[in-house]
Length: 433
Ligand code: SAJ
Image 1 (cartoon, rainbow, N blue to C red):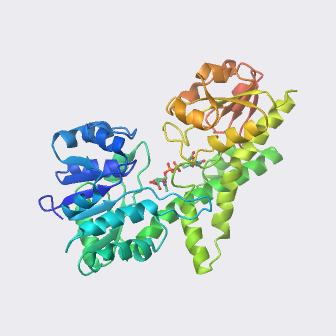
Image 2: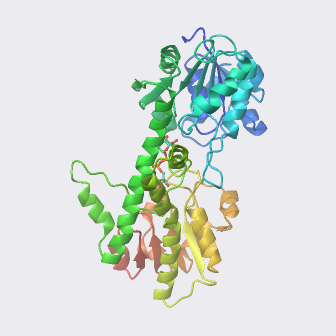
Image 3: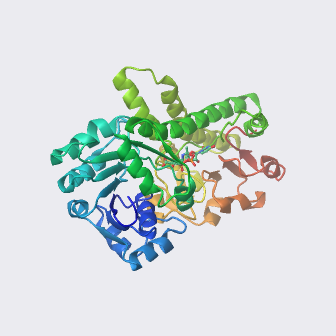
């Protein structure tokens, strides 16, 4: 697994797969990127990143110009000419909240057709515990080769944060598990090419699969606790944000920040992978399910807050113009996957409101796909009521005089309620008084 003898294929050139491919290529290894999307392949081969991520364009350009990275649709040919295959494809949940492993299965099928003695297959996609054993390995063994004897298998879930992916991929600790010691050791040597972070070797594949799910479930559950405490505080007349801040001064307390719900492709999905396996094994997972439930209901709480605030001002929600600030799932990113803005807009429209939205990062198409009208920030601020959903940096400079009709729901604790109230704005927030 040194620079000289490794040829890598990365399956999936998305938010995580592309930076992974680019980092290996820039470390001097020969990398082929495989994707099912023709446009992605064309862009990557031109050195243009289809993914918005700081620093990625420059690194991609260099990798392509140096001839270290090429993209193709042909996963079988790529596998035949590589000795390491890394799978970084999406693993969503379906409408029953069960994992959809279609992309993993398809990548593994291509790999099995090109698999050779001594190859190493690495799974980086987030997967339910036991997926390597139950799904990945049986497909790879269709090649006629035996996992752990003829070829190696390792699992190293990606844990980089969007918008800081390059830094985190090269500095975060990385967890690696293998089907055997040889597979894990080979994977460690390989990733030492791209990371300065600590590499933690865990006992086996299933432990590595579980670690990633535990991390995101911890965050989701913690945020649910924070959201529930915030809603209780609203009724008790306590400013939850101040109270949480005070509680977090305790050396062993770290309550997360309440908000309009949990979005993104990780925290809102990964807990279900644990629930799925717990149910299969007949083990209780009430806490994890309830946490998801609390977070998924937050848009409903925000919609009720909008309706009640309009009522308080003597207005009806029906036919009201509601301006939404931010549709991305979190601040300073363009990503709107699983964003709480989407169910919120739907609920507001069901209540008969007209919804307008602005986001400095997300495209107009995304806003339109949520059934809101994309408008300027000024237009949103001119609405009957303004609802801030995303904590984008730009929105931290909003001042009371900018809220034209004096009704403001600020679901993120990025502005000081007192400053707005003293200027006559009816200001509401999650857990704010
Ligand atoms: N959120 C809150 N309150 C908080 C923190 C976050 O409401 O106190 C919301 C955010 O607004 C957002 C959602 O939660 O809607 C998720 O945001 P996030 O920043 O916590 O996480 P992600 O989904 O962007 O990235 C997470 C990270 N996991 C952890 O920090 C444990 C990242 O390291 C992982 O790589 C990523 O999931 C992943 O790929 O699994």
